[in-house]
Image (tube, rainbow, N blue to C red; front, side):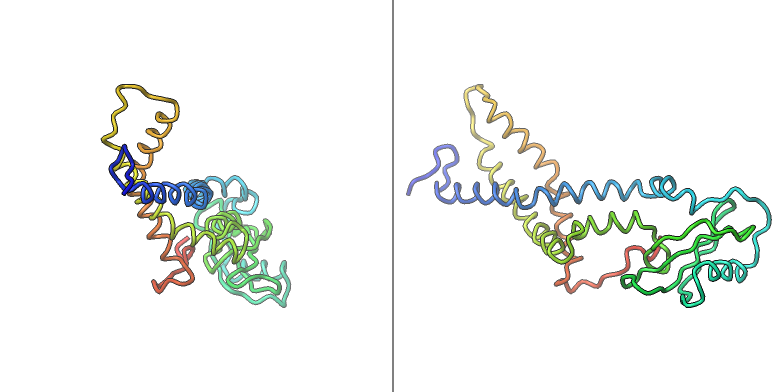
Length: 236
């Protein structure tokens, strides 16, 4: 049987694994990049939202807040009598607005129209489409949809789940390739190609555990998974 001179492994098996690792990387790579970028934005979401929605979230009035019922009535007068009250998120601190959420026609499931009310003078600071009874703001919803399906609907969701299911194979395949190459000595000569390959291997080894964890936890959100799911915005 023909064997790879540098690894002692069957040539066809090594070549097959190398090609699978290479082409699967093209499948998984964009998903990793988008997931990592959107995850980083999630960490900065509070600061970004405070800047984006400063008008809706903050107020400069001071004094004792009006009764919550009066704040709700002010929001209802703004949005119209046909809207159904869904939830209320009172102002968490002085200088912030109360978020009154209504069910209105034309929105997606779990979406509400939120009216932002000054708790002191009952002024309206605007309205936004929010998610869930916690009133998650649009930017966080947008980032979540990027993270889950790239804003491509069901095709994007299936791509994300397919990439997550292949991620652990790419990671472990890279580990096997590194293991078979680790004893190769090239008499101290390093080419540009081998140097890039060494960097690729080192980065892959450092991120191996993270990739495996990311793949396993990502699959728990799959539509085909039997793992119970929860509302990721329920505590926000």
